Length: 128
Image (cartoon, rainbow, N blue to C red; front, top):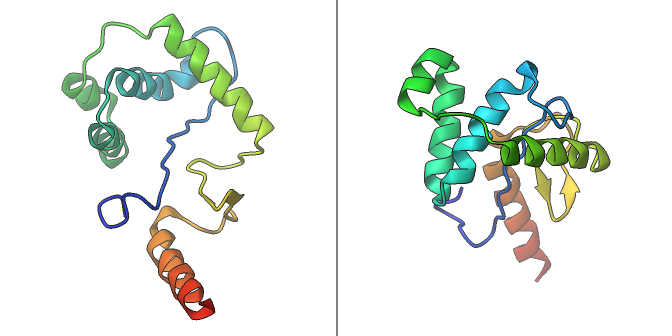
């Protein structure tokens, strides 16, 4: 989708976890991913990092491929803010998907986006 329609989508990666201003073991994976992504400027590499985690979900393999020294206090603070924002925005699942500022129902998945985009494009073209 990013390759086919790069200007049509605004991608924002959000993680969910326990809202706390200190390190919490339940947030370990999210904080690790956040720490890696905050240091990387290239969105394609960020998505590759996340894809690598979700394809294997092996902490040993992942930490060897993407080593970090520690989780920074900035990462912990930013993650806590995002967890709070998730509550305010009523994000009840991750990943959450919005189209035109409206959250898609929980029943939809990222894999449904191509179908939704084709349907939306067809409807817009038919209306003109």
